[in-house]
Image (cartoon, rainbow, N blue to C red; front, side, top):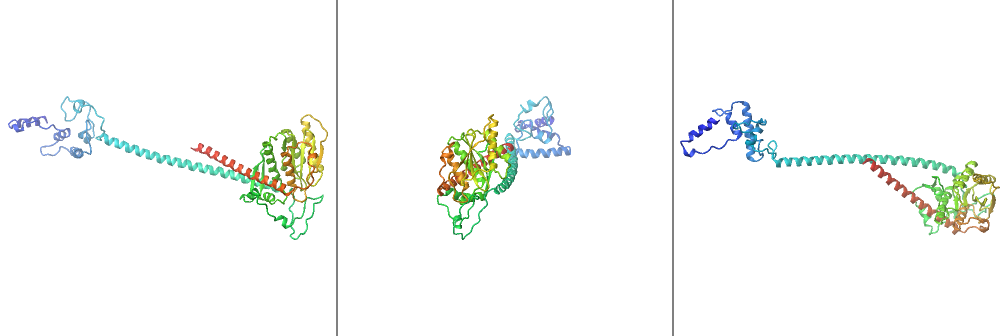
Length: 468
């Protein structure tokens, strides 16, 4: 190649117009000329392939689609082989990498410009971000689905437990219902109303009595009638242990009608109402309440009732304990004053306590005193006449009214000197008790619903933290 250069120079000496330095050959041109025959053909098929590759690269470089710089020039890319250290094709002897190419440049890689490389990296980053977002959304959706399935499963389990509990409560209510006064039958053509006898708390009522309408002011009773639910399980505050009462539509209808006997469930919730009343009046250290469902003398063994009362007296020391008692289809009330060793007995039919009841209450008081290391005589019984009912269904309301008056006036002694009026309660007095019970019942239902919603939200938050 050097000989050809010299020959060109010699030929040009005779012509001054040709006495110029020939253009410097590029590496790929020098490489091609060195492998080209006088006929113009290349020395081998492999050289033909490289020449074709060089031609394509030159065309792209001319168009500006590819830029070649430094060591990654057209010849190197076409050959696909980097130069060996210390030797460069087509370069004179002694010319090294730095002298021929200059300092190493990192602006290109494999013939790719810096801008193209940056654009490629940005596109790759964008694609990775899209893939990551897609995978993240898919993962979150899967977690959300699992969370919803877990919550639904737990809610179904809770619902099943509640339904099972409701069934048990219904069964207990049916057993208790056998203790409530039997329903009266109606004679549509009865002209006169019979009177109560000493042996029975019953009376034949006319259709007119049973169908009389409530006053417009009885809003709480109307709200109860408008409730969609047919059964309720409510916690009882007057019991230290977790105790609930089951109230169904039959119980509610008895109260809203105002002319039917009351179930033990109604009186149980009334005890909780009076318990809260004591707290609001700061009387809670004076009065305690014995749940009517725990002292049913015809369904529970005497020793069980006695133990319950004894534990109540010993575990919750109070001045007086009020016990609404359903006995032989008739509601009665007893008030135990342990420190005074007195039992006050209220009966709206002026009946004396039966022997089995006296045995239970006296045994409970005796056990209470023995636990305190005190030996006392049998308690002193005092029968209270009080208001006497003039019909066969109001005994439950008379017990509720007596209990309310005792708490409201904070009566803890001399009951026989205070309850001396033997007349019947006016309808307004009974209706007032019904309104108070209905108002408290609606309040209790709302409280429990709000608490259940709060518990559910707490559980949902806990599950959400668990799965996310």
